[in-house]
Image (cartoon, rainbow over the protein chains, first blue to last red):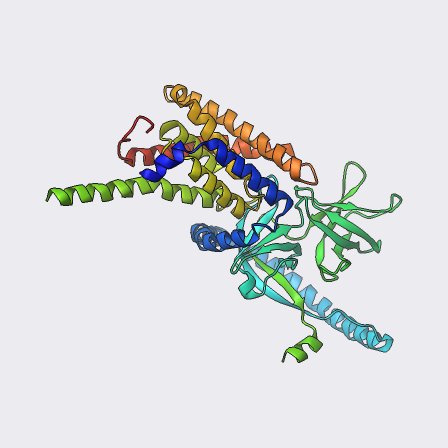
Length: 273
Length: 176
């Protein structure tokens, strides 16, 4: 084959130099190759999905067949929990109505509601350097960089790249992730920083602060990237005296996520109509 | 009749030569994300295994430009800076090919040992490059786990690559 001959004659040294040059540009100017990367992601997305789909379906089927006894006991537990939650629901609705009345009396400006884009997780692309995942939704679905991503349990991360039909999530555990959070109970703001392991740490806490283990962490909404109040995780004490966060979202086994679209501001909606 | 035989041989040869490239495409996809394996501890570098195997036994199947292209695609899909995996694959190809005459005469245990050394070296190089351009240091343990999983999976991967190798027509020059 002539192409093979050309490849073997061409000096690997030149390809190595070219690779180093691309690596340098890509590291310091990540947006340089963005369009090409998005195109490649879109081309490979159906192939990744095709390869992964049968395995995922088979795993789901096996889980369903082997877990009947577990499902039965889980069902009993959930029914009991559901009865309790119904009681809580009525309490919550009463409190909500009361809260809305008080807010209207105080003339508080509330955050507008958000829209959600549901997306299937195609692949967990985490590696020793990055904690990311690919989802099967892109610009065509309204997914753009910076949008927050949540699972049924809590915050997952944010969108960092989006092609036409695919997008990449930067997980909250990634070393480049910094999220302004609020510690409920202590009413203390902090920044949650990923460490490329399972437990992101809390930064910028006052040294004398007392926090109970298990305290809930939510997004504080500061910086405007994440809306206020998204459930993030709970406090875990670290050996060095600091605090880490155990995420609510099971980041190792994500199947479906919701991407939070821009605020659904009723005034903007009126204008666009 | 003779013309038809020659054409069929060509088609057959082309189809046989395309098998390792189809396998390479599959390995790229599986390298991005292994189905049924949650988390990021078990991330064998499957494309690096293919680059190593072909550099030893049949360098023309995965020449340097294909290492370069596979590396760029891998970087794009994994999300690492472009060039990181391209550098690794080109280095594997280059280093191993330069020692090919020595390696082809060795036992399988020796081939596996050299692979373990090569993949460990490449993992450390990746760690060094990422530490150079990153804001924060990366854990070495995770990297060692990746290299370890690659060494564990290599016998299975090399078995599949060997099966594909048997399908290929005989090489038409001394470079294989």
